[in-house]
Image (cartoon, rainbow, N blue to C red; front, top):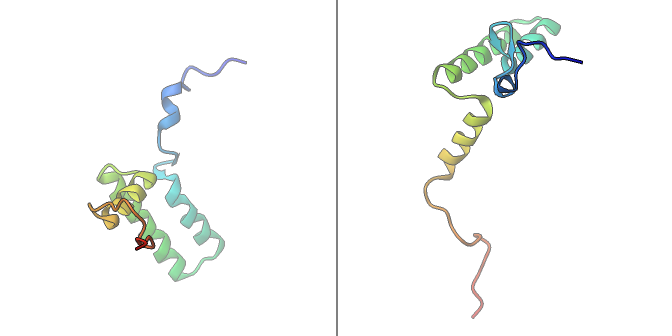
Length: 88
């Protein structure tokens, strides 16, 4: 079975999109459609705005999580665990 010419191996690394929005932000929109309340609408809009900001600054969600984790870890990397005690 031959694949269409529009699908290429380089397309496998692209961010999944749901029409024009990021697929990660589509999940809160579906939650809003299942439970239509004001607070779910506000949550869905704020999550969409957050993902739009991430896209504006060139981050994807996995990249942002790695950046966030390294930001809070700091520059100091200890070679021993905090629980390690030297025996005398």
